[in-house]
Amino acid sequence: MGCMRCAPDAEVEAYGQRLGDACSEADMMVRQRCRRRGWACTPGVRRRPGRRPAGCRAIPPTGAARIVRARAVTQEPKDYEREARIFYPVIIQVTHHQKIGSAGMDMAPKPKGLAPEYGAQFRDESVADAYPTRPPYPTEVFDVLAGLARDEPRTVLDLGCGTGDIARPLAPRVSRVDAVDPSPAMLAGGRALPCGDHPHLHWIRASAEEFDYPAPFALVVAAESLHWMDWGVVLPRIGRALSPRGRLALVVGRGFIDVPWAANLRPLIDAYSTNRDFAPYDLVGELTGRGLFAVEGHLQTAPVPFAQPVAAYVESWHSRNGFSRERMGARAAEFDTQLTALVRPFAVADWLSFRLVADIVWGHPQRG
Image (cartoon, rainbow, N blue to C red; front, side, top):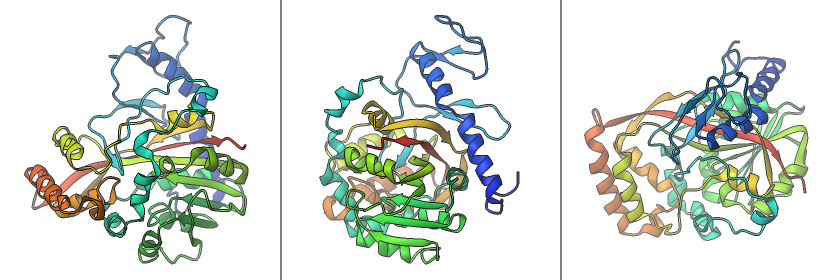
């Protein structure tokens, strides 16, 4: 298959269908059952109840993240174990989804670290100013998203778009992108960046809760943003706004793998973050447990190289929750000094090198 940027719509649609087939909900359920028994499974083998399937190997019962990457088009899915994953804008623990009745979780509050006062930090000007120092999403993310937009017109809604890291590169590939964010500073910054004035791209100032969802959308994307929204309000509205084959795609993280200073970074985050209530969480597990989202597929992109100057890496932290310069005050400079000292020994000519990945989960929200 050739470049997805130039592929005809039929080929893009077929690619999206294969992604759904390669990482079906049924296969994911099988993997989860195996993992609960301490096994790591290999798809496509005969399984017998109560026994470890052929092709499954024992794994230690730890809380470490285990991600399944659907390798379309002809390759079999594989299991990947990742270490020291530093995600933007927060560190998310991807774990087995706990099987909890929806009635019980409907009454449960969101994790305290996702309270509205913490989400409001993304309206701070310093956060918007620091956004361009975040790494870009791998190109594979846009191949997947374009393949998921199957209905015509291929209209996409990007909720909590920020400066348009998803909306701007996606706009040339689809019929229209409505990029929605409540922050004037984010929208102004996005318009000034490459593809910010693309004719397919429409910037809209509104929160996900206030937006009126005017048209059928072939795809709704929430990239590192849904955790800040009111799930009980937003998910049913998304469900009603989707076209017949429409999907909700969650880009739940972009991050660096095998970061050598990760172990020493955690205490620094704990000491300086203004979000004192933050704890690792599983967004997809929170949504599925409440009966708000049904997973259809999950893909982790192949690692791609990425490099940036030490100063840009340090500044990128101020685009994350808990590190707004307005809210950190004088402690922001202290944090910058300590983080610079931590990472500089790993730099070459003052540049840091990484391997960048992103995780995408797609499926059907509750229609309400």
